[in-house]
Amino acid sequence: MSISINHVSYVYDSETELKWKALDDINVAITKFKMTAIIGKTGCGKTTLMQHLNALLKPTSGEVIIDDFVLTKTSKHHTLKPLRKKVGLVFQFSESQLFEETVFKDIAFGPKNYGATDEETAIKVHQAMQLVGLDESYIHRSCFQLSGGEKRRVAIAGILALDPEILILDEPTAGLDPQGSIEMMQLLLNLKNHHNKTIIVVTHDNDLVYTYFDDVILMDQGKVIAQNNVLDFFEDNQAVVLPQVIQFKQLLLKKGVHISKYARTIKEVLEEIKNDRIR
Amino acid sequence: MIKFENVRFGYHETDVINNVSFNIPKNKYTCIVGHNGSGKSTIAKLIMGLENCRSGKIFVDGIEVNDSNLDVIREKIGIVFQNPDNQFIATTVEDDIAFTLENACVPQHQMQKIIEEYATKVGMQQYLKHDPEKLSGGQKQRVALASVLVGSSEAIIFDEATSMLDPEGKQEINQLITELKHNRTIISITHDMEELLNADYVIVLEKGVVVMEGTPDVIFSDIEKLQQLRLRLPFVLQVILEAKLKNFNVNNTMRIEEVVEVLCRSV
Image 1: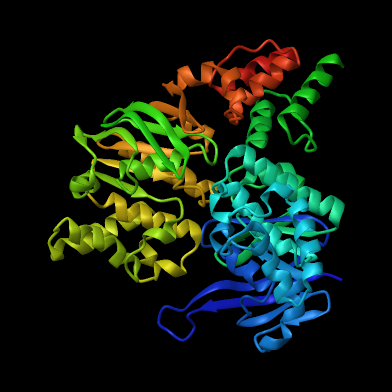
Image 2: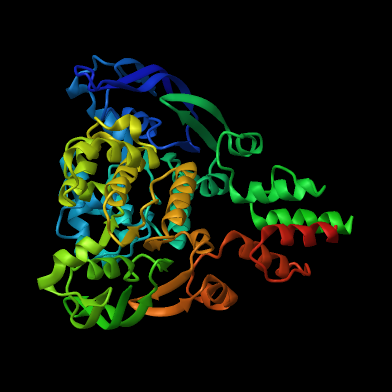
């Protein structure tokens, strides 16, 4: 069972003069049950790629394989439902897509749409709220009186209520304050570690990627130009703005203090220095 | 440049902005920070006259903001919103930038050159014919920025305007903002505590109240308070705090190199 993208290209506005290739022969495999970050400059195709993973877009050429589902240009619309259930997609500024009057109704929309009974729906809503850390007091509140971070949790709960195996999020921390960003990361870690979810995140925050993720995919101009586990990726990659901890380690190295690649927080770096000192 | 005098504002019964007073200096770079829901973005809306305060007064360049002079206020102040989808007017990038120029009565024959100049500044010169709606989130933020920069406003408010940019783009745009401050007032509403290091003046909001105010030096000298407010410290201060906990003999400084020096000497 796997997620793989084989020779996928995607052309926007292919019928017009403005046509441009957003994805250019992408070949990449994503490991399940891990947290993978897709990074790259604005406009490199990150969002377009992730929209292929639940068939919001169909490749102009090539194929997307998710377990036993194969998505190609010719995939018929009515065949996509199982894929959409398996792969949940959380958009940029997902809070702007809340539309129901209450938190409960908004989260319940998905399961109901997939034919769940009222009873099943209620259970799913409660479970999803628990997963994103919204307590019972939120259930009948209006979505529009919540803070940005809370709204985003509701939007994620709405996707989780469909019980997807794979959760894809586009810039889930954009616009959240530092504390909110850390809470979001802990939420995703919990989903991975305790609920067997595969997490794929499009992000610009290399500091968060370095601290919380397993794997990194780097895109540039519609191509995947690097893929590695997070420790090795940042250790020897000059193509990206390095996480602050790595910059710190490099400054130390210039002064002759070598820190191992396994230290990825300030605390861990200082512990290594301290151990050196004792030795 | 912008002055708040005992301003109150709220939706329904609750106060979002609670008796706030401050003075944003002219031709300086001021950062407004605080958590989600602290009232930061509301401050921007009040300045622009998108919301009316319940009590108190707001002055822009000495003019009190009220419904009768919004056109004057909006000529003086430009804004780049957090979610740029909310501010596109035209169906191509160049038309969107041109809209600002048309409003400023720039003659047609000069427009193309100015549009290209500003599109280049934000790195979007190759996208002039594109539909802003179809660009990526970060590209949209760049276009929105160009459309505001091209105007002649004396002050520009950035409401989380780099939140969707990649780290490289963020560096570029922050550099651009720093250059701008020589002849414009810059107000940046931000979560990025590293950005504060470049600011001239900082206002910290919490639950609609100004809880700290001053130059970055003043703000960062009170680490305890910043922690109480659950604000993430700039990286260098995080290192210093953690090093002190581990009994390294480091002094407070804003320069990471100095800290590295001390740490290396201790090995």
